[in-house]
Amino acid sequence: MKTKVQTRQMPPWHLDRTVGIQVYDNDVSLTDEEISTIVRWADAGAPKGDDRDMPPAPRLAEGGAWQLEEQMGRPPDVIVSSAAYDVLANGQDQWWGPTQRFEGLDEERWIKGYEFKPAYPNGLRVVHHGHANLRFADQTLGIAHYGVGKRYETFPDGTGMLLPAGEAEVNWNLHYFPVGERVDGDVVDVGLWFYPEGEEPEIETRGEVLMRVDRMNGMPRGGDILIPPYGQQVLQGVHVLRRPTLISSFRPHMHMRGKEMSMEAVYPDGRREMLGKVSDYRHIWQLSYQFEEDAKPLLPAGTMLLFTSVFDNSEENPLNPDPNQWVVFGRRGVDEMSHMWVGVTNLEQEEYDRMMAERQERERRIAARDQDDDQ
Image (cartoon, rainbow, N blue to C red; front, side, top):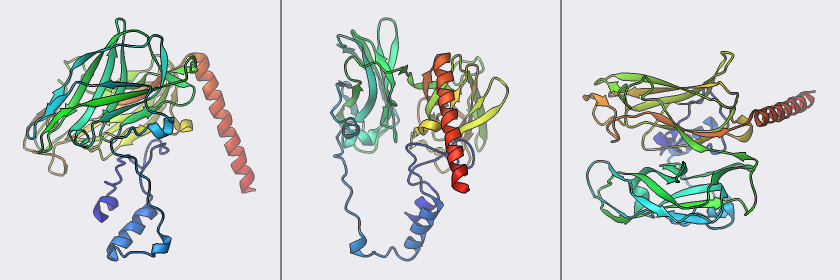
């Protein structure tokens, strides 16, 4: 425990603490002082304290319960379930991509939040990540995305994702990894929570949007990934924001040789700002870094998002299964890929101007208050 805490492997939070935005709603990291306290306690032999100082035991949710149910105040309004899949006890990565009919709703509704729930307990052990998409006649809507460490997403008040009325197909993309025990009939559930009927949020969000770093040079996807034995590779990709955009979160995705990944804004006037950097990426966790409200990047149209990925195929990479291999693109954990899931809300220019003015006014008031406190 001491080593895991001291090296910041636990609790899992792999953000670089020296660059980029540092305020997040879901930050579970420990302060330097907290780490020092735990280390001293472990070095002293982990002595038991005074029972009178012991806080009450935390109330933990039942493992198979919906984690968002307490926050939302009710079970999901709609539940979509995947077809069952048998996961072998041993072997390589397995994928399951069934397509099922979705009866749909009689009228369009606005999604307030979603949860992607592997079956408990065994499904949680074998589902590494997955996606559920609704394919309508004229569009495809990603309604839920999951990775180990990222199970649900809620949208801020006044922001929602529009779910059209009518029938659709549910396209599942589920990545399983065997853990030495066979799991029969695994089913994944997706729960959706809606805004009250008739309530329309002010802003429509796209939720998490996939932005690729590989396949940015005109080659077929992944053709630019070629990592030599005992070597490294750096990839960069650029995505131009055609409209003003509010960024709510980011979630890097690489595999076992992935080491670092960052997201930088290059503004239309040439200024550059590091938004966030994961410097100790670990494939066993797929964490979503969710900015606090006033820290969410508010970016003008024409801003470029520059993504940089670093792969480490050396012996120094503790997750590297075999540094004596050439590594290319592929879906297996021993292959590589690189993209980032970014929480995107596109804005109209008027919305952007209003939100920027409101943010600047809040910053002005905080600065004035701090100045008064110093006097």
